[in-house]
Length: 380
Image (cartoon, rainbow, N blue to C red; front, side, top):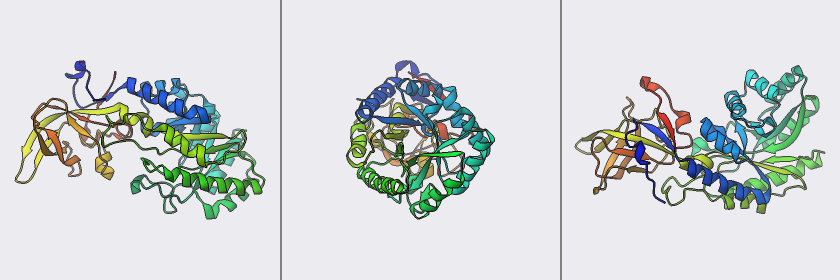
């Protein structure tokens, strides 16, 4: 499979996000085929991409929604996701956000601290409701990914530490408007070493047995998401290995009879279907560096500037000899750089450039810095 931009988009004003809906459908079909034998309930993580045409296809394939803000809960409801398939996570839920989710009667809050549980109990009581909660634990499992997207270590702000869990469970006795329905864990993002999910499963197995010893039978387990994609060569692996991912939990997680296991995948669903398309404004050569200056920058795709992420970049207009370029944007920041010393077919002003695997954490993180206009989204 080789990426090609539909011909009618060659004159589309740049920069723009191009979404390949056929690839998205293929990815969702593969995902559900891998999840169904183990009866996994998949919740799509809206933080990866919350565009309505994307969400419509995800919902049509039977996924639920994983939200980390009141705005995402509202977007999921607007997109037609059933409230009983919506989970709400996040270390800093505001009262307004909690009240919104309570009023919608969503399936579950993934709660991260005693103070949050206390506020959730008070607000649920104020609405005359009993909120379903899963305790998000911090299992201290190293996901072997970038430090900025690791979430399951003791040093991270997320979740309840194992040392504090007993006190948190005891506190539930004094919170009558809460119903404990499960455990939740999410150890990080862009995980490619799948054995870490076996380590997570082992921790959850221990915690389940411990909770059962204290009289808590859990109907639900939520193992989070984090499955990575192939940023280096997206054409070689446009669809992640979902079977291997679910196989780790099937093999290592001690599921109780009738227990529902939930996963929260975002990047693995939408990243490869999205491409940021830009045009070369100038080619500038200094004493040491040849720059390709694009009309897209960190305002459209901040991941490389934020934590040095790699995206495969190709020149769609040239078949010339490959030369090394620093590929940069127009923003008044030195960090506005997509890649350094990367090989591109010989590039000139006006060439179309594709920055691949940008469907997740691309458009949703864009900004209006430098009073930049928002890039268009095109679906095909």
